[in-house]
Image (cartoon, rainbow, N blue to C red; front, side, top):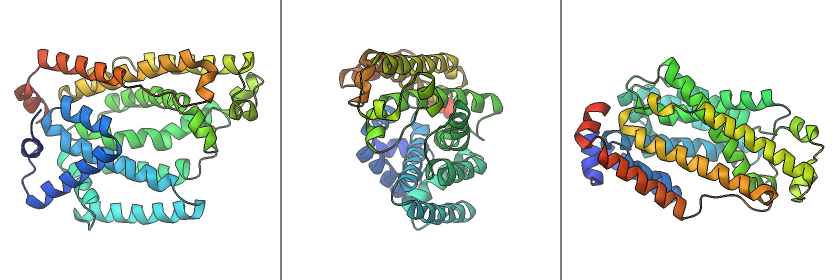
Length: 313
């Protein structure tokens, strides 16, 4: 794995101030999400790593502001953040090293700014005001407003000039699968926080109440509901097959690892059944390590760093 200084140089980041900004961002991501950070560092082409680290950090910042405080505080804080981001995008500068790094990544990679604006708009509407979903259509609207733009504000940085229509549509399918798996894996924690992320209409179809889920009742109806939701997630995961063909070569090892871990987590949810209502279903320790080891081996057997440099440039 190249040193961080070498990685910054490979990405064309030579200004001392910008190098400090990206280092600040990398440290924030490492503290908050060490697994995604190490996956990027170990598997992604070095020229892509700083921009993607800035993308992860920005995505986390928006999520945190959208989910913290009272409804009024979330609204006001998101409006203030949107103002700071718009100013940073317009001037290329900001007092915040995170925003300086992110807007530099957006500019240098050529990500269309509307993806950033859609993400911030969705944070203020779909996420900050989240009250669950009545129907599948409500869930799909949430993806379009928030989850998909949020992913593209990060993953879209892999493409010079931003994703084309086919690539963006592929990531829309991917985020559908990822969100369904995430909602199931985090069901217990979300319910404890007062969030029900399964459409209420589907609870009614199975004659399951919210109280049944909150009290982790292991009944045939609850098991049937969870099995049906897991099958929907599996169908969505299958629909996202082929995403590697739409991924830049320098990021394919990372996306392959993400997809493998998603499938592993979904299988764990299926095995847990109603147990997913009692505690969140994580990856465990060994599965991510094995996934990283396999991805690293495949990467070493495939294109080398010089090929990655050509592909990313």
